Image (tube, one colour):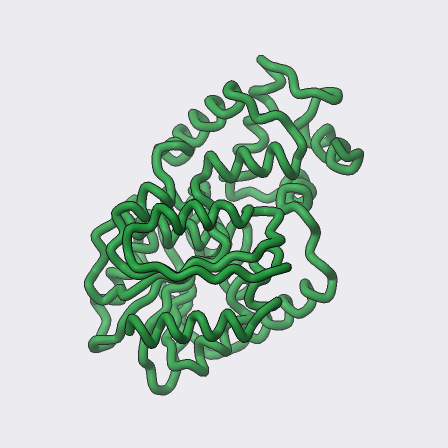
Length: 324
């Protein structure tokens, strides 16, 4: 275990010595990991651990570019909307209109992120290509309600609720696309398991994982350098079930995609150290509907649009051309 990682984990109660022991320490470590994964609260422990959970750190140049783009999007003209989720939690979204709309995007952001942070860089592309966009705020984060995030297990119901909300508005026959980044990508992919409204024409998923269980196991073993044994897996699953009433192994993107009836565009970078590109290959293989795949060489997590904007935009525009 790297010294810097070890120091953070010991300080937050996540490690005991060099090896993770069974029993009480496994429970304590797993409890902290599940809190970091699901709980809304974000204290110093969470902030310190996030740097190691996400793999390779982002460059300062990229952080600055993304911050500027987020500020620009937040400063643009939009309407804030509130709806109620099926379990009574308040959901907040931001509706940004374009002049001559051809389609509608429902944009779902990632884990411990925000709508402006994850979509600021691509917002002008959406706007300039005639898209109304509903930027949703995921439950358990920012202005939406809820004490827990659900890694797509609960958010898929919210995404469907947003799609149904659009169906009640007066937007004619505009096609709707579900679009997500990271956890948002897995959210829209899990939404594919529902019987979607007929006006939903497709899904765009950028760097989504396969399931909560799979991504937790990958991060713990590869980024935190801990041993994620069967005991930890079982403890995490039960803690997840207690918090959000569904286990981390109860549903997955491949499960949903096996039932998918709308086209899907999968996007992923080869150098993603948070969500490995192999997970998108697994999701792609499981997809029963029409599907496209864009793999971006040298792109880290959520950076495919930055690394190869031309290929990204071409793939998305062709997807719209074919399925609008």
